[in-house]
Structures are given as structure tokens and as C-alpha cells.
Amino acid sequence: MLTDFNSFDVAPEIPEEVPTGDELVNEVPQSTEVIDGQEVVVIGDVDGTADFSHLQGDNPFGYQGTCGLCSCENILDSFGIQVSEADVVGFAIENDLCFEGDVLNGDDPGMLGGTTEEGQAQILTDLGVPAHAETGGTLEDLAANIENGHGVIAEVDAGTIWNDPNSSGNGQANHAIVVSGVARDPSTGEIEGFFVNDSGTGEAGKFYDAATFEQAWTETGGNSVVTDVVHA
Image 1 (cartoon, rainbow, N blue to C red):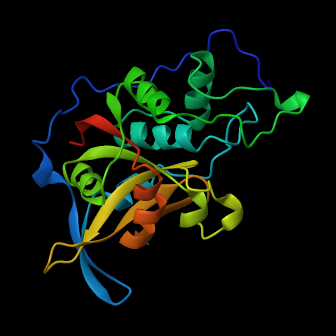
Image 2 (cartoon, rainbow, N blue to C red; image 1 turned 180 degrees about the vertical axis):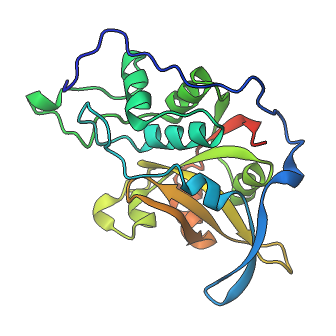
Image 3 (cartoon, rainbow, N blue to C red; image 1 turned 90 degrees about the vertical axis):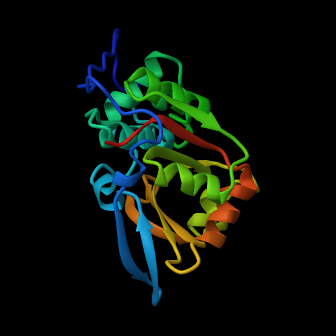
């Protein structure tokens, strides 16, 4: 490894009380925007969570496959627990919660730091934001979690959302992103799409239409990590 450590310790500032359940649904930010010429209602703190997003790979271990760990960082920061990518990667290494290796001995940096949704949920829980993994979700399930104030990580096919066949998981999820908001038609309530923070590109608050998300997320298993607590 590039950095030696004996006892990597993350000591985040954990709030004394983090709200639980769906009781804060009415406090989730809502706004009206125009996307591709269509007016939509946006539900979720898209701008607020964007402040915590960045391009993955900013850690001293040389690990580049840290999309899930950066998604955990984004969620933790959005709940007021201040951590860096290096903090989360170090914690995951020490607790065997990510794919490990040695960059100096030729291991592929792009593979190092990979996580499962169960591992992501464990990291969030251990660092102060209880969470669990969900499978087989629908777009309405995903939207409901956002609308009820939960933090959400979605496991998607990178090739679909990046429109890049070379990055495809061939029908499998191979990338983790934070879903920060949902857009609905103000007249029908139909889901028009979702806003995401993507550490793979460094983009924050990017909009993807519902059809793209259906293909990238639902059709690859609908797997996600959802916090048990809600944003205050």
C-alpha cells in the first residue's frame, strides 16, 4: 500500500440525535424547475448534497475504484458527519469492507476500493448514519426514499448513465452513485427522472430521465443503500 497505518481512526462529529422514520417528509426541499422545456417539481436537496461531491481517487492509498466509498462520504457529510474520502477509504481498509490490494506491486488501482451495497451500509452505520441494503426496487420505491428524506446510494450500470459501452457492466451494476432528488410532472405526478452525484465523473446534481434510470438501475437489480434516518 502507498500509506502505512496501524490503527486508522476516523473520529467524525456525530450529531447527538439524528431523526428517524419518515416524520420529516414535509421538510424535504421542493422547487419548480424547467428541464428540457418541461416544468417539473424537484423533491430533494439537490444543491445541498452537491456541495459534498467530488471526483473519486482522492486518497493516499492509490485506490481509484472508490465510487461506493465516495458515495458513503457524500451521505455522511450530508448528515453533518464530516469525513474525507481518505477517512472513509482508510476505515474500509482497516475493517475489510472494500476490495484491497497493493498498487506498488501492480494491482489495478481501478479495482481497488470496490464495495458491495452491504459493505456500504455497514460503513454508514459504523460511522454514525444507520443504513441498510435494499434489492429489487422500483423507480417509485427510489423516489419514495428520496421524498421521505432518506439518503440513498444507487448501484447502477456505469455504461448506461455515461453512454459509454466500454464502461458497461453487461447487465450488471458496476458503479455506485448518490441519488439526491427526484423530478415529477406537476400535473400527473409521473416520475420524469432523478438527480445524482457521481464521483466517477465528478459531476453533481446531474439529471437523468426516468428511462435511463430504469435501464441503469431497475434492470440491473434495483439495488440500493438507504439510510434508516432522515435528513433534518
